Image (cartoon, rainbow, N blue to C red; front, side, top):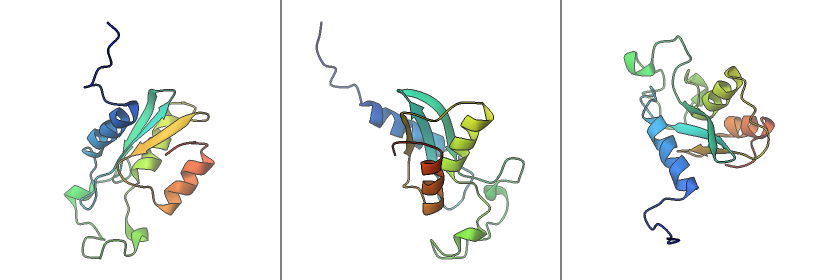
Length: 125
């Protein structure tokens, strides 16, 4: 039978839904972000935002930005962005991200992350 499955989601929807699931691991109390790095339809790595490895989670102590307005003084945040964690995980495991690589994320990356994404050779967002 060569019928198209109406219930099958697209690959883009599949990977963005996985990014949403990854975001549920976030330890940030202000925003939950998840990212998935994909090459040739295969997941290379995932990442979510939160405190650096080995540090107490933001959910277990007071966030220094909690009383500030959204977007105000982002440099005070000690959290690592999901996109950066995703790229770091690929590097830690020796996974090449050059080539036809796409980064799926639940939120649009900040300017700092965008520069890193471009320099890392990731072709699509």
